[in-house]
Image 1: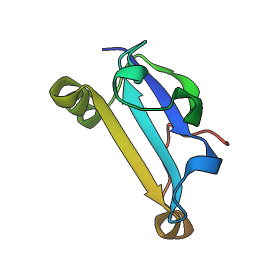
Image 2 (image 1 turned 30 degrees about the horizontal axis):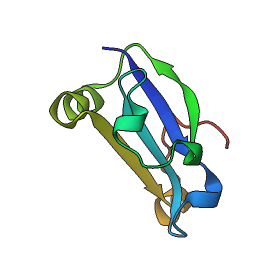
Image 3 (image 1 turned 90 degrees about the vertical axis):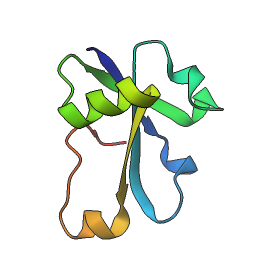
Image 4 (image 1 turned 180 degrees about the vertical axis):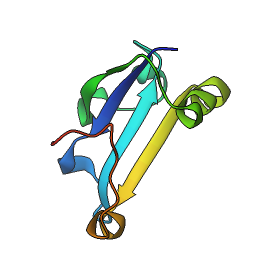
Length: 83
């Protein structure tokens, strides 16, 4: 399974979130978000983890969010790049 990964641009993040990413099949982002301009393409993964693959199979997308509190505690989201 091949998935594209997009991050919500900082201007559109709710104040409690440090990061929000969505994984979708290639060229399907517009099926799941209202405004494509709010998202920045981070790249493509050719080997998504089992949880990402399951979510995409079940609902067509996989969203992962990192709160500022979790970020302050040192949790990381490996798919994320500096925005």
